[in-house]
Image (tube, rainbow, N blue to C red; front, side, top):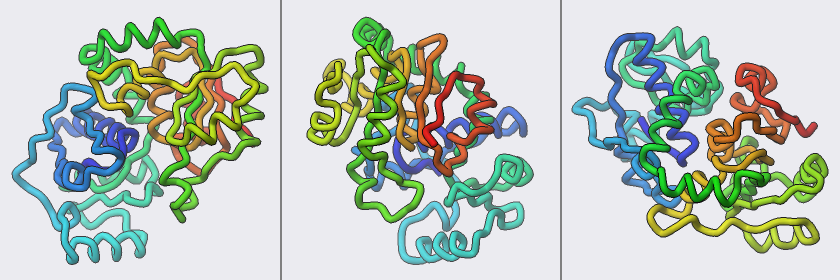
Length: 280
């Protein structure tokens, strides 16, 4: 099941590719919920890479809309169920470990986020190639504009209203401290709250990213532009994390918060092997 914003969709697709490589089976992606809800601006994988959102012939109750499906998902989530026999691998709360997921890999249906650096690393080179194939012109323009810049991702919007502790909004002190790590640099801001950023970054050498062009949706233009930056200041966003993870810079420095998210943990950073700074 594909769901959520672009970052979560990429984690899910990486898990799909990893499962296919280990199991030798072909895995179909169900996009009905993703396309039906149209959340996060209706962004889907096909906006970033050549991807077929055609629907598989089989589905299960967890992949459906309606009250019965919602109750089934709620009960499973509240019960902290990770696996239902060989029928379902359930990781909606993103607390299933990579080893647990691998042990349950042969389950018929996979429902969750699967935010695993291990599968992301497996898929990275293929994904970067797919992105470059589809967006050659825009990436070339992004590299011309931003290849010496520090890309700063500021997500506020929906996170300000969320009660999920994983949706922590990074405050002014976090970003000002991060800026100190890149003294004398040019900052490019990617944000859903332009006015807040203008106030916080006032006095620093910054610009708020404009669009690369009208050929793609604004979120895709931001993603491609972020990929072209030299270094990064991230919040706790899967969107920004993937852009830094796929960076076209050979040795990016990534400044990130110390948060309880599997893809931003100390272990994950060491697996990636990039230069990173954790804000404690």
